[in-house]
Image (tube, rainbow, N blue to C red):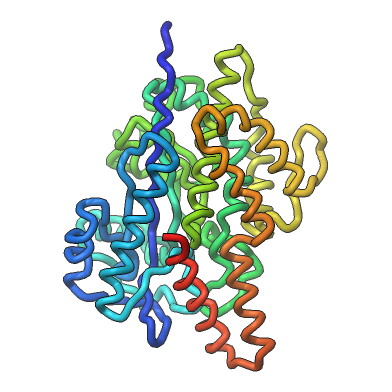
Amino acid sequence: MFLRDPEFTIGIEEEYLLVDKEHRGLVADPPASFISECEDEIGSQVTPELLRSQVEVGTKVCANVQEARADLAKLRRGIIKVADRHGIAPIAASTHPFSRWVDQKHTDKERYDSLTTEMAGAARRLVICGMHVHVGIGDDNLRIDIMNQLSYFLPHLLALSCSSPFWEGHDTGLKSYRLTIFDALPRTGVPERFQSYAEYQRHVDILVNAGMIQDSTKIWWDLRPSGRFPTLESRIMDVCTRLDDAIAIAALLLCLMRMLYRLRCRNQRWRQYTPMLIRENRWRAMRYSFDEGMIDFAKGELVPYSELIAEILDLTYEDAEALGCEAEVGSVRDILSRGTSAHRQLRAHGLAAAAGKTPQECLNAVVDTLIADTREAL
């Protein structure tokens, strides 16, 4: 059967938290006009989220990484402009350093009403934000094939994106606490494996026919065939506070997908490992980001993350050249040298504590860092 080349278009969705610039806490009930004002600035590319203290943006379908960066920068600028009018600010972080989930209000919308009813307390705790990256792959079976192989690399991508070390005023000890909250929902985590798109659809149909879900958009794996678009959607990443970090990770993801397709065209495949092993590296990424290394499954031993990412960059160099995003992918090295958002948050907290600040002032310093970093390089 003829297989057409994938489109490798890209789209990025980001979720932001809204904070009050004065007290730095979440704005549980932002102005009623906030979303409509944002729509006036950036059109339909902004939507409300589950909680009123959240907002989501999504780029257009972009032909390349540079176009995606330009569009995402425009979206961030638009949200910031509207927020500034009301004395609030968006922060691109996957958790808020100190605000409590119990104080948040969910958006009055049928979809969110049904979600909070069905998932109860597990949904009401979802004061978390993520970054979703869609890559255009029009062939149904190819999407499944690449999903099966790409799962191996999901922990490596998460490690670069961590932005949720704090929860309700406490240092959790994790660089990505967000996933401990999200994993309480069903149909999350490392994706299942399927031999074909038809097999995947049969499993979805069982859940739909049993009344468990309305459609496949209620499957929230770390990586999934999108239920709305002909894309493979990666959902494991924390939202990146710095725009350039987000673009670097999205570019690397795009190159990984092209690399796997390139191998397929040569009758080669990436070796598939069990979900048990992938989940172990996933946990290490949640706990340590890239600080303590990951398991090299072929060697059966822990390897420094810097060595693993160097191998991945070598593997995808040809693809970065073909896609014209060598500079963006190369920026992954900057994340390693500078640290993720989680590292920067912990550093800001530590510096404030060393200066004799109160516990609340230390947390406020973290929020100030997030506000500034969210606006950087726009």
